[in-house]
Image 1 (cartoon, rainbow, N blue to C red):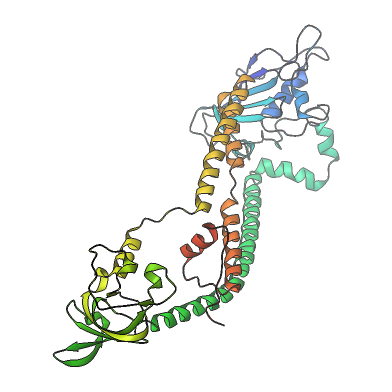
Image 2: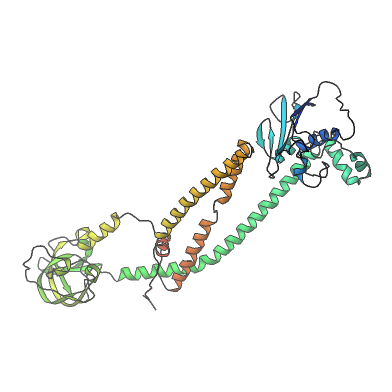
Length: 443
């Protein structure tokens, strides 16, 4: 593997594009002091990944490698070096007979590396050149004073050069990378354990609240009327409320709950609470007399009783007219089941915020991309910078913050003895209102 061509532009004393071709044999560069001979070896070291400005004989900042200008020539805005290597023996892990490594650096601090024209990372260049002797830490390119440093160096420092020559450096690098990844994975596992421990500490109290809520619901179901007393074939029977059919004679008295809709045939001072249907908190006095009007509001139908209405006083004989989903309560249940779930104000606010943030990010990225192209950063570099900015601007912790907020709201509702059985009910309660009023059902 040998050098084939070196192309320099804007690097140190080379403002114009210069191409140096390395033919067969030995190529020597001859010139007086200060002509820039050492800048050629610096360019080779720089394009191969050297990141120390001291090793490149710069003043202390990497931008010092860019041509600084003269009285007759203005300063350059970037430095670019491309080195072409002969890879006919496929020493490098690239499926090509020639490998061109490029590096470009701008005064703004932006830089890019390329391998055969494809943008890559410094790490990719470093891994490509491992065990070849020409990498960043290789022994093939030795600058001024480097030999004296090697002779005077400690044995551990000289060992790195011999390991590079023997091909051990690649495996040592892979071992170091594997250990680093294992350490990072261990840290992530530790964070996950901390998060799981925090969440598990909340599971117990929430399970207790859920159990209380389930018991409360079972108690509420037990309060409903599972049976009804009817008159069939002249006999009084107690049957399941599900067995009622239109035409049955239903017997009601104080303390019962109407199991179906019906017309009152005989009335004995019957008073019924229909607050669930009409919103009236007071009991309604019923009658068995016919009503003159044909179409009356639900609350004015005094000769009718409706399913789910408790009897507060008196008794009556009722002709069943509707059962199940045909009752007024069933119609309400059907409407509730067919109603589409609406977004809560919290969901609407998050959607609106996301849309506005996305539009703002796209606008800023477009501006950054245009500025990068205007400053001659290159389309690939400008696009990569704009995409990185877009990714960095996305609030990744937004979902976590919303979840934590809902969890805190759930805890506060649980302290107020609110009954919450499922997560979407919690979202509706915490995200769908401004004020929550609680009522103590059990003390």
